[in-house]
Length: 233
Ligand SMILES: N[C@@H](CCC(=O)N[C@@H](CS)C(=O)NCC(=O)O)C(=O)O
Image (cartoon, rainbow, N blue to C red; front, side, top):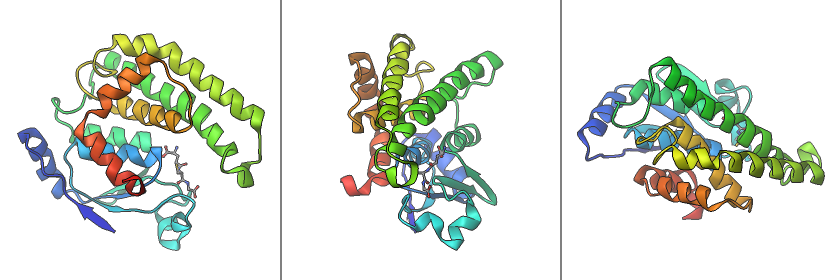
């Protein structure tokens, strides 16, 4: 188990961190795009948390101890006090709604802006992640579990490109981040999918690479990369 702190210079960040110290946050999981998300959000929020650096398909998600926490043996998992939460998108949304101050993360409160944020999040989580990238992952590298399916992989890859590029003009128009001036849950979801696509050698347009460069300059993103992918360092 590791325990790390993220000292912050901004007073709002320090306030959030002070609040979190009393809140007992623990995260399980490293090494995948999905586990990157909560590390990144916790670091954006300047929150102190403990973490268990367990990896997928290492046997570490199938121990009795972990199976009691998540019977589906999936990472990431967040525990906040006695509240246990799975699903990376739900975890980062919960963290942003629980701990963000308005100047840190865009957390819209009115119905229309929340719907716009949700539209991005569901699009990214269903069409780009589950419907494309994870389909590829199932059949490249996990053939022993899901079978070899080269045509399915090619179709999923094309589907990713078609959907991501269809949204590129809206991404370019939305401002620095998808919801405007401040980063949101949707950016963490999109960036982790674009990084995953680059790892899978899926070509991206200049617009998407420019978006990636903007988001990648954030210190919390860089720190989360180090924490989530220690082997790459
Ligand atoms: N939809 C879930 C997916 C979680 C998931 O599939 N995690 C994988 C790693 S990316 C895992 O834990 N696999 C280990 C196993 O199946 O035993 C999320 O976004 O959190």
